[in-house]
Length: 367
Image 1 (cartoon, helix red, strand yellow):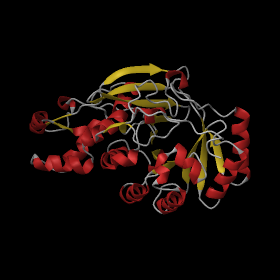
Image 2: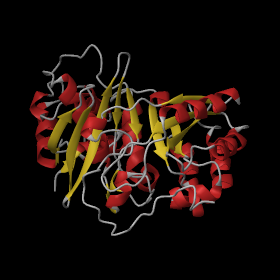
Image 3: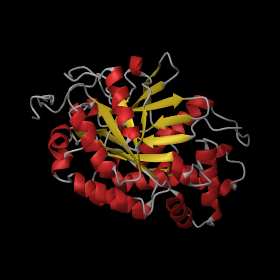
Image 4: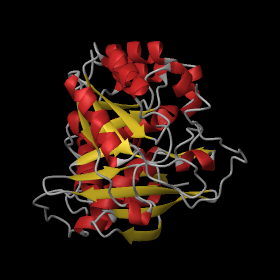
């Protein structure tokens, strides 16, 4: 079976090159051709020796994800549905802005976290993506947005300036494949992204947060969504294993390694669930001593949910209360909701494989 070179970071390529009896600098050349140039054809890699290219063709290939469908929202947001193998598909979203372009990458087909407000959670967990399938989303997006370049030419500016691992799945539960993909994103011979511009989002897998800090610390976003355990237990079952005290302690440890001096906390605004006075007070108390930024996310509906979005004035007051308490708070602008590409909507039209009846948390059920 041919090796897919998208599966290999710099160290992996060096091992492959060594096994082929060639010199280590060939690995850097391959990195540049594959990731910087977006090239998939060995014959076009003109600065590689002909004999080396022939050995590559015999032993390896460069194969990105197969695009099943593509859609573009009115605001320019683009979403791709990608074949993940074994009857699975994942989604990748590109959000263009004036000064940057952000790619939202998936790391699993489905998700085991079962957060009650997320469309992907209804799909259940199906499989981990390989490193090639993770970095392949960035490789594919650059080619799709900027167009394939001819060998030896260069792009003035990359289309993707920021990557967030906030798509389908819990990234840390696939850390063995996520870390090599992160290293490729950061490698100056590949995509050369700053650690500050690559963000891993987690629901709070405490031991793996510590491992990420040691192996490849990038910006961290924590899906919080409640400031006290009883409510977070209901919204996010993972909280029963790693409650808030453990999660906050892990965040403080992560800050010792992080490229930023704060942790981003994501908080989806659910009407009459987590948007009241008790909720904002609990959040202020929880984060008072944590270097943090809170990102309020208006809930984005998906088929089969009984939750609804907090009213605009409620979100505004919630934000004002946090800012007044000295906690930097922003409200995320909803992008791509007309193509089900907004936060929480990925796989919104995928068949529910969990066979669960998810009862939404309300003010009555949490009292």
